[in-house]
Amino acid sequence: MKVKFDNIRKSFVHVFGGSVLTENYFLKNMWFIVAIVLVMFLFIGHRYKVLQRMSEIERLEQELKDAKYESLTISSSLTEAGRQGEIERRVEEAGLDLEVTREPIYLLNPKK
Picture 1 (cartoon, rainbow, N blue to C red):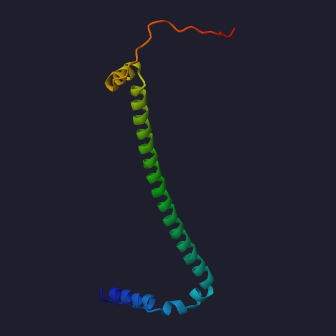
Picture 2: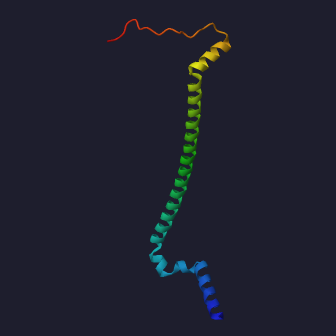
């Protein structure tokens, strides 16, 4: 058990001490390792940008939903206000001297 712990300790000191970077294998492949690290940074940065854009899309979708509901509410209130019974009630409330005609409408110049 002492031998395994000693080997692990030596490996740990070898890797984190920095002497592993001076070995021939790492010196030969230094540019490849730098390229891999650079690609990792690019992927991490791209993922961060994608997450930001996704949150922006979700915020805009929620804003669009709210605008649709507001539009629907306004449309229904305008439809209600434009009904004949509602218009007659508002005319009476305002005290205007207007009456609904009981005679049919005649066209003077009908198109044929």
